[in-house]
Amino acid sequence: MNQQLTAKDFTTDQEVRWCPGCGDYAIVNAVRKTLASIGTAPSDVAFVSGIGCAARFPYYIDSYGFHTVHGRAPAVASGLKLANPELDVWVVGGDGDFLSIGGNHLFHALRRNIDLNLLLLNNAIYGLTKGQYSPTSKPGTRSPSTPVGSVDRPADAVLFALGAGARFIARSADTLPNHLPEVLTRAHAHKGASLVEILQNCIVYNDGVWGGLADKTTTQELSIRVQHGEPLVYGKDMDKGLVIDFTSGNVSLISDADGPVADRATVYDETSWVMANAVARMAGDNVPTAIGVIYCDPADEYISSLNDRVPYQPMQKSDLKDLLFAGGTWDRED
Image (tube, rainbow, N blue to C red; front, side, top):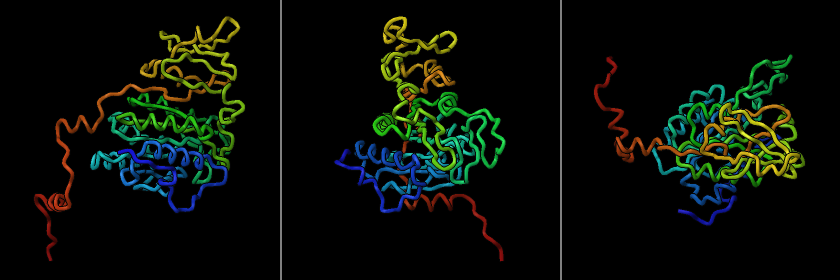
């Protein structure tokens, strides 16, 4: 039931301990704002995290919270949601937590389509453990573990999610205080697993990793806000556009030199896997980064499908005791 809530209702009395200037501050504020607008009581909300800077989220959101072990947050959250489907369950992890040690658990949460809101805070570095390169670090990243520069090919969270069979995938950034809550609200409304990649800055170990994309003076030229039913147009003057070749999946850039781009640009369809794949694969200095709801094509949610076969029954305290002592037991002989 919706209530008249404010961001303060989701703010704890804990001292926030992130580095000054960290993008996490903006993200936690956006999440609190989103939770207030959704209106679910804090007692019906749970945050689950793994290990890393992003994993401190449960301390700063006034709700139920579980600070679990490295990479296992999606697995723990899956069990929590199965045990109590009425909870709004949010899962928070960094690019290392979700895509390295936790990649397997994220994969299965997405493919099963469990109704979880998964927030991947991507600063392309391991911040908590002092700046080692991560799965999303760019080639050439110099760090304590790659002093001469990484030669790894970075993982792409959106492409990973598409390959895993995710039905809702979005992207925003810590520097987009109005855009991020809109995306989070859409993610929550989706019934099933929703993954939101949030590009963020690590001011200590990877400052400026997203370049001009994070700068409000240049972001319009370096990013494109994909919107369902709208042409793929971007730029400060909206004078650039994208055309998707549905045979090859390649993307071409167009400008207003040959006429209004809105008349020639591809109209985006967020239910199209081909379009989502195409905009996710865009890379290079001359193409924009796609932000917004990149893919949304709802399918049967896991718990609903499971309940069709095994009706849900809340567990009582006595049920747990009976379960633990069911069947044969072994007693130590003196």
